[in-house]
Length: 158
Image (cartoon, rainbow, N blue to C red; front, side, top):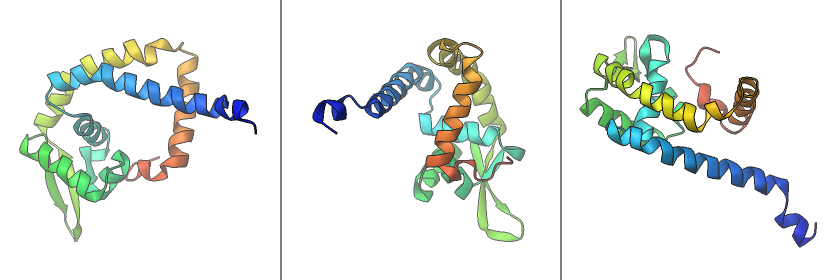
């Protein structure tokens, strides 16, 4: 492959566009997070818990779903617990498993935050796609996610 072909490879374009879109979307969403006193990591953990059976996940599953290490998710859960948004629970009969559980206060925070968050997502992301494009785009994202991060669905019913 010659230099021009290498530098104009469409795979570079695909990665560049993905990285630019990700950075741009994060910048558009940051004011909503700041206004509600949560980080993107906090919100990701809270959303994962809210969408899980019983609004709870084992810490190891929450770590896998958020792409954090066990020590990383411990720090996030510690911060969320101090804020009263989650609590830890042990599982009867399995002292090795600790669960993070969304509290009523955590659910209330999501209820306050999500309308502005979703409006921003709609304005700068999903609303830019036609109704016919969105399902195909979600399928593509799941293919990519499942390939590079198969443990992301840990603890979820598929």
